[in-house]
Amino acid sequence: MHVPPDPTVLRPMPGQPRVVLLKPLVTSPLIEVGEYSYYDDPDDPTAFETRNVLHHYGPEKLIIGRFCALGTGVRFLMNGANHRMDGPSTFPFPTMGGSWSEHFDLLTGLPDRGDTVVGNDVWFGHGATVMPGVRIGHGAIVAAGAVVTGDVPDYGIVGGNPARLIRTRYDDHDIARLLAVAWWDWPAEHITAHVRTIMSGGVADLEAAAP
Image (cartoon, rainbow, N blue to C red; front, side, top):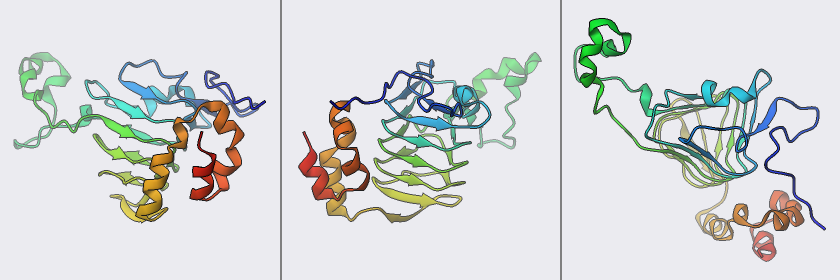
């Protein structure tokens, strides 16, 4: 019998309090996270919503798929970080109170790139930063310290500031096959039975293992 780990357990790794599963952690209705995606932080991984998702005032959402690995210090900047750039000053005077707050209308209609969406099985290296409205494809890798300002293709590897596509992990034909298999959508018991294939098999092996 193949028994998968419990996706509702906050700390899945015995003796490693620095690793938390995000789905049972997040409470914000503006954040959606799939099962088994985790965050690793030696300080306080449970502060993810306040320390790692910044300027999140809505209505845009942060959506993270299943089986994503987030290294220490990965941050998502949301649309609330935007300032006006069409006048002489970018300073947000109305947010500081006093009579300045009478001009709050000046902060409406700021640029809004929409939801930030991360696919399934994405690996984020230490200290990566994702800018508002970015879409990161399935199976992508974001290098340590990368600043992701634009969309990342499925199975792409990006790095740098601003992040650039270094290469893709597979050719277009195999990427299409992997997306068709979509192993992350398999039942957890079936994934458990085929962990070795998912981690080290070829594309054809994965296709053969599909339920």
